[in-house]
Length: 308
Ligand code: SF4
Image (cartoon, rainbow, N blue to C red; front, top):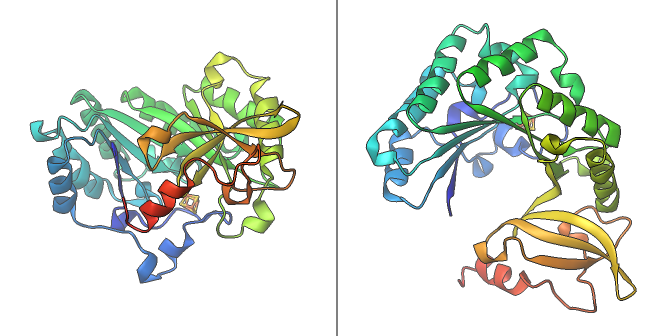
């Protein structure tokens, strides 16, 4: 309720395509699945009316493929007093990996950096939600320079990415990534579970193994890197985090909780699923302790059917 996702149409491609990505439908021209808007006025009209919204998340594709002048058109008006309730502007991007030149040497890179500074000076919290999968992505001078320039504006960078087989299914690689991020002033934010769409078979990692990798990586890093939450599934009912694997009354279970829920009341409520070596997504899990359903299931079904 507090966050609006905006998909600007000029940002519906990427600098390169990740083979594990679930957003292909947006790129390959299936009009029914496109979620793009060119209408800055519509965005502003909506935000003006909805004063309960505090966060705007600009996403794609990759909004950083857009020219700065397009971003200015969407974001600069938010400095007007009627948008005082919009406290945070988040921009999801993989440009810090795929095209760090976007922030350093592109023709309109300086204007982009100025836009971030202007938003920050105007009182907005600007967060670049950077997609990283591996520490190798932050080993070039240009990648470091892009990070330095963004941070000098007062914008912050939070890092997130999925755990993917054959790429980063390795605790040491995550620990090294988080340490490197912290060194460069980036805040580790999320380890995601590979989604239940797209080329999942090749890239999926069982939840039990994902939790093991997360825990082993966490053990290796200092407190400042322990801000990474996960492993987290962005599922239909909400964002569900695997908090642990334990045994209760002789039954081995996953301890789960909602980080985000369709109903805000679900957030932070612990719930339990039967342990499984092979499950890779929420819908493959069964409730523990002989329960028939998870506590949210009936309400979520009713929501899907439009009955709430
Ligand atoms: S950059 Fe992001 S949106 Fe684009 S293909 Fe990769 S994961 Fe998907």
